Amino acid sequence: MSTGQGTTAAEAHGWGNPVRADDFTGGTEGWSIYDGPGHGGNGRRTPDAVSIQDGVLTITGDSEGNTAGMAWNPGQKYGRWEGRVKAPESDPSYNALLLLWPDAENFPEGGEVDFMEMMDPSRQKTNLFLHYGADNSQVSGDVEIDGTQWHNWAVEWTPDHIAAFVDGKQWWKTTDTSILPPGPMHLCIQLDWFPKGDGATESTMQVDWVKQYAIDGASSGGEQAEGGGQQEQAEGG
Image (cartoon, rainbow, N blue to C red; front, side, top):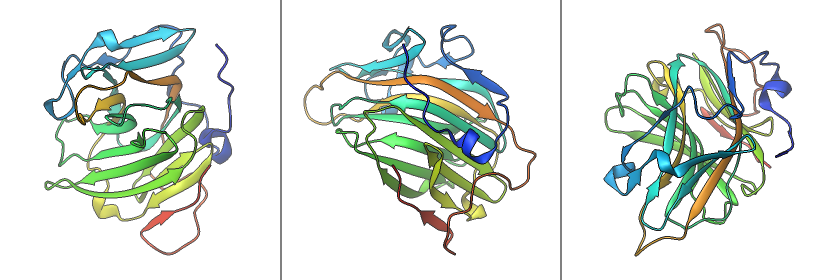
């Protein structure tokens, strides 16, 4: 199945070669697929909700909240991750995510970076949430773009900032180092169920490939968005 290529942040900003990549032609080897209670204890995450066809990963959430999530361990402290994703219009109860999660499994202290969270059921707006601190504080942003089409979503994490990109264009950034994650993080792919009312319409998300890049521990890559604030948001898509 050809999904096209589009512009990647890696190419646009010279990230070099990935240290790890998966185009799902070899199945889900290398991934830890969740098997247990769903997000917030609602529904269930089950490996049965993961499928691969023609090199495209699909997570399917059903009417009862059976869905899936999967982790790409181990992670790293600082780096860049990028994935090619699309998600058809969905039930309002299903959010499609790419995120960074702490290797230490010490949320909320370890942080969480939801650099692609599609909450809008029409998939015309995508959100970002950076969780930090023991009280699970958050900063956020959003970008208007047609998530029902293939796009390349990326995050860059350095000692002095976190930035988010879509199709090579930076659309969000924070330079507030006090809210950045304290330890190594790994990529997760999740279709999370937030039950709303009775039942739900079957919903899906698809991933063509994901890639992980290392950095040298210093600030690097990514064009700087204009503006002097600690958090910046630019138009996308």
